[in-house]
Figure 1 (cartoon, one colour):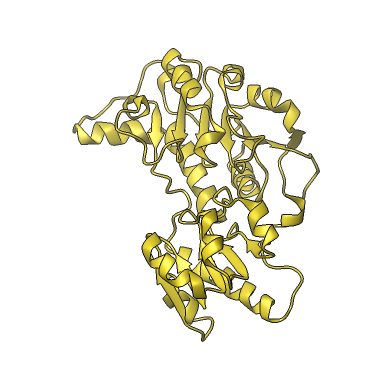
Figure 2 (cartoon, helix red, strand yellow):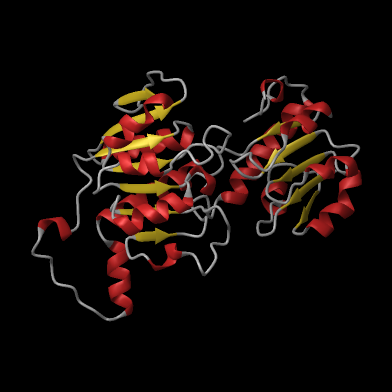
Length: 317
């Protein structure tokens, strides 16, 4: 039995175009608990809870429906001998395009234009050059995290004429990679040279609050921070302080420590902050993309393949 659990998306129609076996789409924890005792394959992300393992004696494979894997406590899954794969290829284009869109929105002042539109206000060009829209051509972009999304952001940024620096745990030269790659212990240096910093790294023990007051203070006062990673990668209190005091010029944020972002958050009120509701990964093609990964992995399981698409190596975790 194949069960897919997601509050919003329905993967059945897309999956049925690829394989003939039935798929059960559920949208709530209550529905999921009803089918767990019979499930052999489960596709899920934020609805997952570790205690579900006790209710799923036949479970053989978990397919994450998201690129992020911080929903899953890996050791219990490993002990059960259950295989696990991510959906990291499903929305990499969408997230990378979203990061670029946020960068261009900030530099071209599209957020200010939208605010002015709501007030029916026609703003004349600023007399001071520093107050005008900027160009990214010739600017430096630092991307923290060089997975598929980070590398795609780099390729687009280079096409826009930007110099690119990549930060990763273990630097290595890559075809079509950044102009320069540095190790994570040189993060402050890479941030200090950037006009725009884009976060695309996964949430791990090492990246939890990776960007704090020290890192924000190292940025240029004209610098922009863009987060399409996870909310906890940024120390949100430090960011609020940096925005209030003018340590950085602005930020575009797609993810937050608490979601939905509470109405009481000061971030809502800053004109130099652009907020999107964790929508970077949203795409009209999402169901098709995830269904294709799920179908491919089921085929590999049937064939006895040793490696799944986007497989998480639980033995190394």
